[in-house]
Image (cartoon, rainbow, N blue to C red):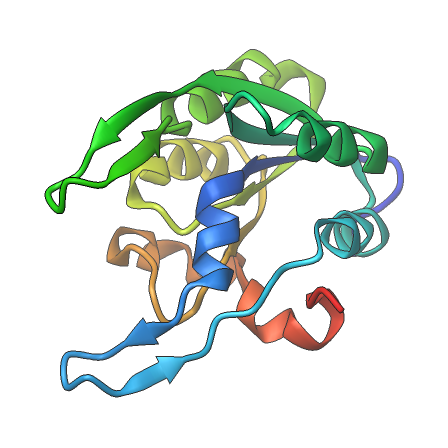
Length: 177
């Protein structure tokens, strides 16, 4: 557990977290190896607060018209929302998809906040965060990498195994009722 004298910030890729927990995973033989479930974001915030005494929890999320109730709810729990503009993209099946990758925003915002925290928790299993995680470790500010799903995350993160925690292992405490 983090000591109370340290300022600990969490930087959360909301889509990576949400989809990583929610989506089923099927192996190459068509066998389901993981059944998705719905994360309770309030329980997750409480987990970060009680287990690691976080000072701030920044959640990076695409800004989609009509999602204001969700944004208001997340803010009311205690998350600090950082928005990414989104756009509609037609995928290969001809279906519309909302796109709004937050990777660059999370990395940049972590660096902007660097002098304001003593240790950081990065919540994502995406290899695009490798350079950020590597740098935070190098300067002694990496507390944990909380990976949404132990069955699917970037192999680029393997060098940071001693920092890894998997949300899938916390299902009993974090599942939405």
